[in-house]
Amino acid sequence: MNRFSVAFFTIIPSLFIACGNDAPVAKIIVTDQKMPLTEWPDSAYIAALDSILALEPIKKGAEAEAKINMNVFDAPVFKLPGSVTGKKDTSPKANHAGKSAGAKQANAPKADNSAELFADRFATALSKLQSDPSNASLYKTVTANEGDDLFKLLKRTYGAGVQGLPRFYVLSALQSVNAGVMLEHLNAGDKVRVPKI
Image (cartoon, rainbow, N blue to C red; front, side, top):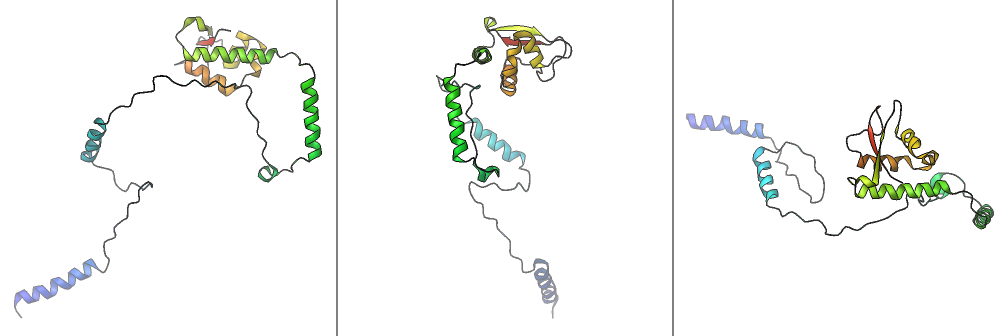
């Protein structure tokens, strides 16, 4: 045996042992399905994406936006069936009695609805302020005292009618016109814009 054949017979078996019988596994890519990121993309790939995105045309917004008005103080109430809540469904008699009581209340003269009127006026003024927050005729500025939260400040400004307002709606709507002021945690001396009613 010459040196070539000895080298051939010692290298080839070692290659088979090193490689084994495992064939390379190719992953099938499925469209519209999330796949885990196994390695971070390199800078050349990101630069290629940036150049592609730079060539995309910018879509212009609609010229006239649709305005949707919603009475946030008169939201519909949905009753879930007993199969979902785990409670017994009301009997037809109880349901009928509830309907007749509701009909009697509807026929009775309404009591003082000044809280509802205040809520409607406040919501209307607040939506006008949100649509044009720089218009000084639509707001007045109130200074927070020590220990005030938003609803104490509103109660001091408008009176007791504030108690019927939905907290989350009022907080988020006023936050949109009071940039830079943390309405959830007011400090003494903070200036808060509130709608003029």
